[in-house]
Image (cartoon, rainbow, N blue to C red; front, side, top):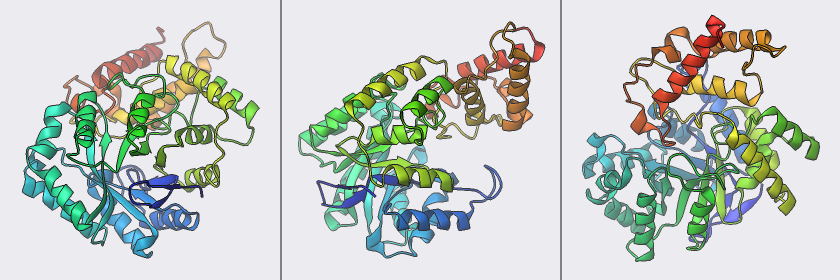
Length: 410
């Protein structure tokens, strides 16, 4: 496993980090977490040098920290790094005592008296004012600085989504000496490197370079952009195969994400085959050549130009008050588009077959009572989406397309 050195503490950290937002479940998305499968994944990861584990109080409907704490505590505490977050999204958790309670609960769940990497979660979501209410005005940032001085927190940082003004404000605090950020977690992949994210119009390259010039270690999330870069369009896939026949599309994305200033790249490895593929990519890392980087920039343009929904399947929009499976709907549509299986023209000889496959696949992927036609555009999901997707608009677009296919009026 390729390792990176944290310039703040000297930690030797695996370039592959284990994301704990989507743990395996026994029988589908609403069933209980498969603890035996979690242990198997952790055992494989530890055996192959993965030592960074990223969780949150809100992951897996609040179960991630406790289950990962139980699994990791089977190993010596100094053999792995715990990363977790102050996920005080709900206004009821803004008061200091409630946020402190959340912090202490994380320590309890992880069966530890210190946290290696602690983050202010989702800075920018809701804008600057929300950030100030969650962390500044309630005194929580001062409290966390105190915990760091005591050694209860070893590295203090934040994860960034959304409003760039919040990102800039926290960096200014770092520049002014009000707080020292040991690391910052950002979304970085070869699409967003030059193509701005919809949520803020900012490129990953700009974010990365702002941190690099301050010598702040980067932790990377969404290297596969919610799985989109593991299931690239067929024309892009064939070009990748012609260059590296044995390499998966995901491996291209992970090699790109491992920029020199990156401490670790997080991956939500729900299945063993994902973990195995990622450990192969990073054991050891073969950096991209300049020519390969140029090739990925061409791929990025091809993918960005496609009419996909930029959903990363984070499920922050869930549960929908009307039961709609928002990530499932977007995943089915994007998968068909990426695989060139989206029926678009009756004159296409494959139209009838593609139409049938799309409709049958839709019913299999998403229960009928949870499909896009149930959306009433209430807007509850809008403020929750870190990608700033106009979810009701996209659901209406997909529903209109699906209805045209059903009525055969496309």
